[in-house]
Amino acid sequence: MTNNKPINCMKCTYFYVTWDPKSPRGCKAFGFKTNLMPSAAVIASSGRPCLHFTEKNGGHQR
Image (tube, rainbow, N blue to C red; front, side, top):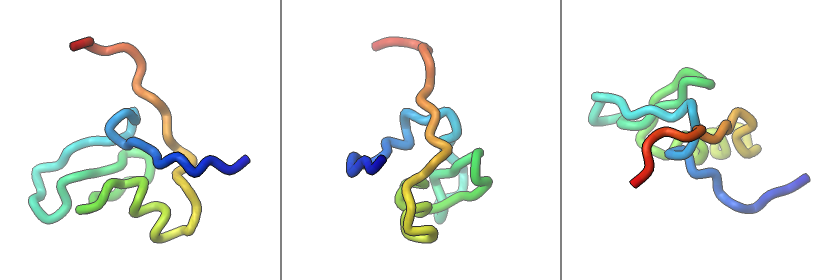
């Protein structure tokens, strides 16, 4: 199955914001920090989309 829709890391359970100004975004599933969106870094390094994406459940609503 191929899905050309980009992954929105901000909706993923594993996404987090770091204090590192050079690498402000991170992925807990893969264990790295980056200046790109983690899903873009995964595609750039592996050539495949992120397989760990897990959408956040519930939380607060605006």
